[in-house]
Amino acid sequence: MDARLEVYENKMKKAIEFLEADFAGIRAGRANPHILDKLRVDYYGTPTPIQQVGNVTVPEARIIQIAPWDKSMLKPVEKAILTSDIGINPSNDGSVIRLVFPELTEERRKDLAKDIRKKAEEAKVAVRNIRRDGNDAFKKLAKEDVSEDEIKQLGDELQKLTDKYIKEIDAVTETKNKEIMTV
Image 1 (cartoon, rainbow, N blue to C red):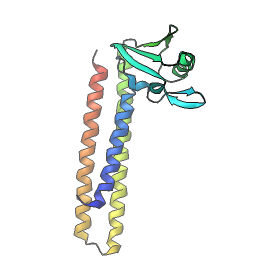
Image 2 (cartoon, one colour):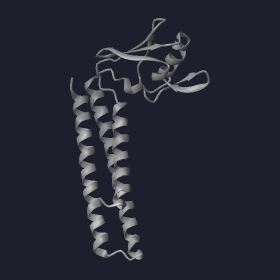
Image 3 (cartoon, rainbow, N blue to C red):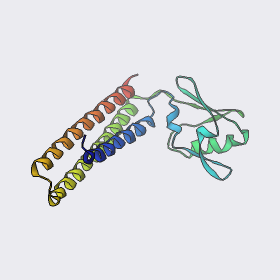
């Protein structure tokens, strides 16, 4: 592959990775420890991921259990969860914190599916913007004695990459939608 195309392919890969990370944070009625990835707790003055202050497990399909290594961290972890946008109230029994995920209602599933489609469309726009930037850069190559045929070929290759990553976004979105809509 042409080195001039690799830059844009890497950017497109990053757009997909960002989308997948975003989707990991969307809960689908099952307990998924990744919804805690963005949460930070104040650990001796340092914002620290919850996974680094305790053991995060999924003992049952709809329960996440957080067992802080330092029991004094129970309150800060509980506070971090309450102030987040997860929408689940933690229960603290003095040694562990449990997050119980309720079954999703049909309406909530449809809202999540809509949100997933919106995020997917944003990822597609990002990929298309990368393609536009690439095409603009290729047009500037004409000033550097690069043939029109070569510029056209680069543009065609970039379009193929764009199509490939748009299909990948569609596949990732379809998988997440099935996960959300499965009762």
